[in-house]
Image (cartoon, rainbow, N blue to C red; front, side, top):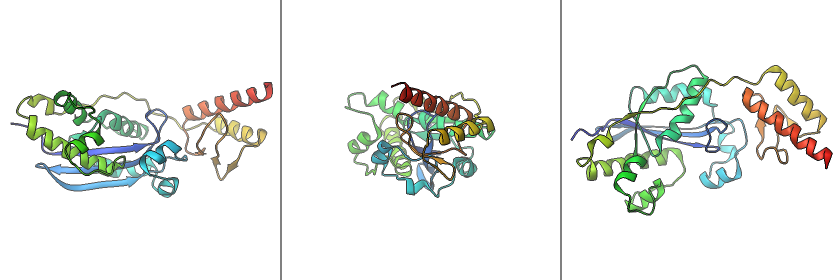
Length: 253
């Protein structure tokens, strides 16, 4: 049986589900050699915005946890060095990979990897279970898990993989082999000086709460405070459109 036993299991916590607009807030990873956990990587990541209430409730991560954390462009190299040339492993791995791939492309770095998806394996062999979500599988296999924290989930994915490999690896070995991870994304540009100038004018014109580069929540526009010095060109464009649309509605009503 030729089942991979050397890999890096990893997981992210993010501000939402869309890598185009949402941000990484925590990275957790484990290096596994010969099936044994030998090293870990864990860090909070500053998303340059406040955390949505639903994410705080889901993860327990709060604004104060990420406020002094490194931004993704400051910590990405350390994570890529930890991964090295190893195969990646995760539960629904393409979700987590897409966020890292986006961050890498934004820094003009290559991140073409192969990965093993424990969710895909679980769906193949555990179809009779009520769910194949990570938390459910941990309960099923009696794996202790403090869910929705990156390092804990990375460890859990590793342990589930080991169980699945022992129980089903000889039945369908091909399913356990790494596959290329494909996610296409274009490099994002920072907000232009003209966009930032317009945002500043809107802040003054509409008496928005703005302090030390941070725009605080605006009704019907955003539930989060946003660091305007860290937003991209696309994010600035969306924010400007929302602000203008919101205040047109306010003046027309």
